[in-house]
Image 1 (spheres, rainbow, N blue to C red):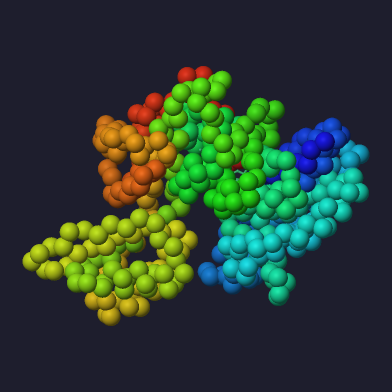
Image 2 (cartoon, rainbow, N blue to C red):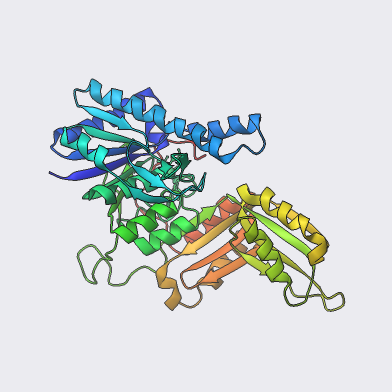
Length: 427
Ligand code: ADP
Ligand code: ASP
Ligand code: MG
């Protein structure tokens, strides 16, 4: 008998039929003798719809109220799922994040889990019931305010609960068969990975591969939680995210690790250009202190060569588009102090990242990447590199073509059939 945490994403519980289908799978696991804790996301695109609704009411909704609104999505799905399981003759009890003991800090909209007091979940399991937990939400320790963990946060709820109850495995059920070498929605020839290490998955998630939330992978690595990413629409084995890389010569593995894990893309960033910055010591510090002071995380930075005649330069950086208004307002307020000419804001950009721990020992990876983009007629606007990642910014409407071209150039295309997307809208 095992203790399993199963997490079902929004596309797996998009409507009543889907909820009944998932309930069957959960009931089967319970009947087979396993103890089952289920973490569930809001139905379909509910979270996006609630955000749209809030924005119709207020351009900048208070973050505390926003969190109360968004947690309603997961409460709907958790109770409906409990009803569907009960209908099959298996006992089930649903719990909000607060009831399940998910304690977070008070950073509304991006709260971090600081503790899981799982006694209520354990009681349900001891009583023979399936425990169903609303994902993506928690409560602050002292003020009892409801918080959310950031988009995709149910993944993190699932891993945190798996760690707290000592689960044997944390199964993340979604609308594709596992982690692929690229998003199957864009690259039908993407290849499913049998396993991926925490490090590689961290880099993929940090580069935009939203199949797992970045924080969930960090949490899993720290607490040694084995994740199994798989489809709720099939019985196929998915991808294991673990510590171990297969040993050399082990059956089913090649002698060498592949150079590249995959190609990730990200459409959620925007680019700010600070035009006509005085090219003297200290201005970059002033700019980025201002942005940091507004609580905004930045990603890539490019500073152009100073035009000698004018002594001025341009500095561009990327940031989450959701923070764009805050960052430009903060910079606008110190324009006279820093002495730059103007600000440009561009959210029609896309970022492509080639990720792989093996690339640090292979020369020519960047050259091959740029060559593939040239052959596809795609202009590169920004570049950043690290030992395990090369990222480029392109026009948003060229991003899909860029991902496909790079995936093919690095021989990642699968020979055996197309990667299937079983559900979801890709929103
Ligand atoms: P859920 O609602 O189940 O949480 P998400 O939409 O958050 O699902 O994540 C699953 C989606 O992640 C897939 O439908 C796919 O479009 C996208 N995705 C992006 N990169 C990858 C990748 N490398 N492998 C698999 N899926 C990916
Ligand atoms: N419902 C939340 C979201 O859409 C959390 C999740 O699905 O993981 O981001
Ligand atoms: Mg998700």
